[in-house]
Image (tube, rainbow, N blue to C red; front, side, top):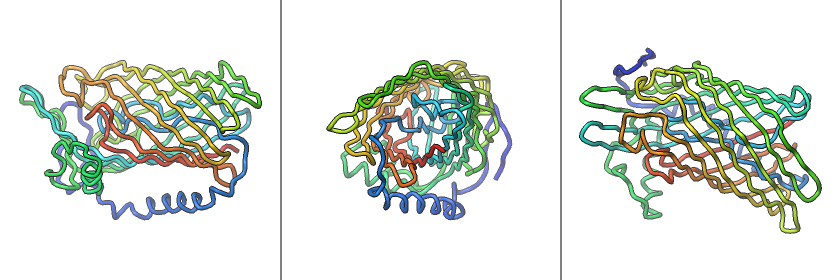
Length: 360
């Protein structure tokens, strides 16, 4: 496997994509932990369920390498306490598009496992870190996604006739090959340093309203040769708000966020990627019992690139996530979600999210 950085040059290497077998022990251990905790969810007893966002973002291979926030919750860790989380995303990408000047293919699979920790340093202030580990490769989901699309009458976009479980991220413009990644890779991704400050918080037995300001700096610690990172440093600032009401019908909540991302010049499509992008989330949730909630959420972001008329690079992204939370014994929280690209080709065909978090 080659691991050399590139800017607008071609990166090629022979290989048949990501071999899932070599990573099965780690993946299976994590999924086994999720399953064993799920079996005990029904016996957890606690206060009313707080409605919080999914801790995920657009996992498109040319988007996830930048510093979009994974955490859009309107909460700040109490002084002297830690909030830790282990989040995993399994995403399947397939899109092929072209015009007179450009051709793009994004065919592959991404597995992202990230550890995040936040610490309350003083009342209303926190600092934190997120360390992701990323696998890029051919994967194994192609057949499942084809069957999913057939079952629900969704368009295949050519996926059903394409070779299965191979990796090819390719972009060509005006006869110049500007991106070619056809080899699998894995390693530490771009690490983010995070922080937050509480602006408003009102909490009583009937409701909880919050407003916080959060920020992050993403460092170029990942390998851009297989899209494990962007090769550049990004800075993000966002405003996050939430309102949860408690009634005899359970918890009813609404939440949202909006922010801006500033990006330095990285290695990927260096002369086309923008220096500024916007993003936002909006979600609704209902917790009928103290141990379970159901949520639906929209994630949006503006394009990361210019100089293109292809949807994959130039169109605003809109992602729909649905699922919920389970409160487990020991006050662990299990976050489960499935994401679909509402704005087609601007995000993965499908992403599966699992997150396990705890405050102590």
